[in-house]
Image 1 (cartoon, rainbow over the protein chains, first blue to last red):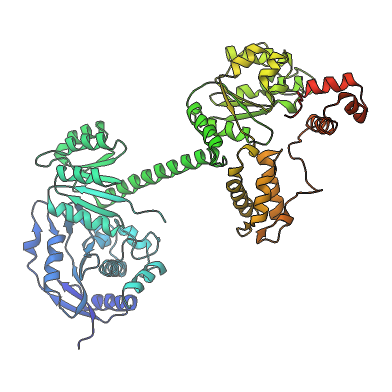
Image 2: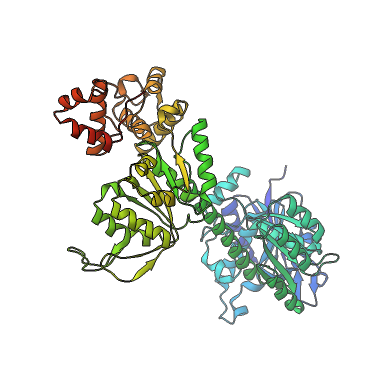
Length: 180
Length: 446
């Protein structure tokens, strides 16, 4: 029997080292083995010409459709600008208590805001975003603890304020429903 | 823990409903969705939503019409309208119709979070406000007025009906029956409840002190008047003034009080400027004011001015059925105050309390229970914890006059109201004894 795992699927080139670092951080946080895969989607199908962005709802559905049955949770990793119809942008989204989530590093890089590039910071932000979306798939809602990774972040500065990990409270909630 | 804020999302576009639903659920809100205004109104009629987030442009009934109907149903509903950039003017109309705010689609995630957080804060504040208001009301309300007897029910009914009026009230009853509590309950249930209730114990002050206390004084008005000082009538502006032991005020004060009640204006002692104050007056006495009027001791015009409504509180001995309730209430009160576990009372002690006439009324019972809790074994109040016997204190006695009255009555009863023998026993002459009988309105018990 195949052991349950968390699968990270990269759509587009994100760099092997980059993905491995994220995988290690996810394993540390959720204690499940993490499998990293690369896959391809024709992103043109998800592009909204009027908004010049990619539809996050449709991408989430697509990732959900291709997620492996052996994967306990799957996160699709992107580098394009995501939106949902009601919001101007999103960093990522996930199905609460579901199996799938998506995250994009498009709005996480410094150069997007006219600041010097910082790859280390970009990796840190993206790792937090992936752990955050995974938290939702495990049933965690936004947390009010300032440094908890489950705190809602609407700006990159918000992401920088929090840690990579779950606070004790979120960890306790996680423990009640999942043997993590 | 605070309850979850509930949000109703009303939008004809499924993708919008789903996106907002996911967003708010992840934020820990309780969310429901409706695809049109009609369904939303049905939900609003049957359930309570803290925030309603509604699109303005919907087929059938639009958001504006829905807003008007929601406001007609629930005036304090928080409705946030969602609009396309092109229809901001419509959103402004919605604000005029009572919408809390509007957001232009698509929203910046941060704007949406802020908007909902602010609305949630307003809801929490208004809930807190409501809780505090209720708490304030219940504290001063009828919480301490314990009683299930017909006599007490009648009093509480009178309190309820008189509270909303602005009429003067006289509360009569023996010492210790809870006249001040009744005054507080009237004030707490009146429209003046958010303004002060100012109490003055007229019997405790000399004429000049009472005058200064009631009307205030100007600096230098008398020796020791080093500052201007507001009087109690001024302090009670928009509220209620409670004049306890009103029967003890002098003839001069009666005239002045009558004038103030008629004009609602007064002059501070040592001053020359008229000050006005909007107050309601509640008085209390344990004397028979009517007979004092008949005897010419109390002004008739003042009596009628004060006695618009009379609430007579029965003595405890006339509502014996309330004693168990009161005992239980005082046990809880003092066990909590003294941080002791809740104790009980045994049947013999309760029976004895039921037989006792309680000349000091509820105050006496309260003191008895407090004492029993202090000296008792901490488990059960028994007969030996109650001060029946030598160490019993007559709690109805609050002043030397009370003591003298009680003592004279006791000796008169002892000698079957034989004036000569009583005067001899008291070592006073007969005229003095007659004067005392008249002063204290003593009558042979039937």
